[in-house]
Image (cartoon, rainbow, N blue to C red; front, side, top):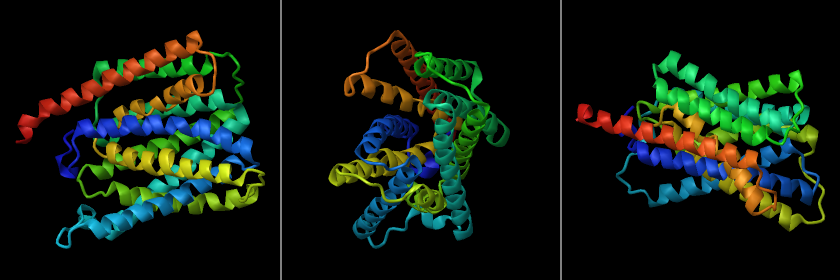
Length: 320
């Protein structure tokens, strides 16, 4: 469970994941404003946030290359080119499946059910996959934290009672969860030996995702009609910069050094962040379901993060 190989302490990895989850939670509000400002569809929005994210990350990558000392050798240079291409390609495809299937599930069965099935199934798939492929164990406390987080998610999202369940939408949400789970597990698997540059991974994965989404975005309508182009452009740039480029760079860095099941639970902060934002900025009422679900999820995330940090600290003497 140590992460000395990648040079990122577990505590910082946990912090990265928390910030990423909170940033992801702002995407929903920003997307709703995008849809109000023009007729851009969800797949086209997903394409543009990834494509613009590539441009932003490329600019950061070039800036880092200029400021890096001439004698320094990037850590990712130790990774064989073939493995790097496989890792980036698999991550990009997983991200494309995750986003596209989720949007399709929302359209088919509604936001509440799609969110609960996707984010609720993900931790179960990830915990099982991590146990089978990497022998990562949660233990009794970890299982309780996952159960508490999933219960909080159900209360938070389904508390309004306005959900409609359609089998086809549920299957699409499960497919989305599978894409997310594969992305998380592969990031953890390849991050264990330290030969991973998370910034480069994010940039090239977005390039692959953009290529996968482009045909669907063209079919939906790539360029939106709007009478507020500057507002729409600003919102798209925000989505590309904060809940996409920044959040995924932090996510890939943290997911490489933190247990996969812990990652999946911490990322459940996304609906918590979205709910808080809806109450504070969008004027939605603070219901009992919102409050109870938020408290359950925050408690579970805090407990699992603390257990992750304690477990890593306990391993440090053996590493020396």
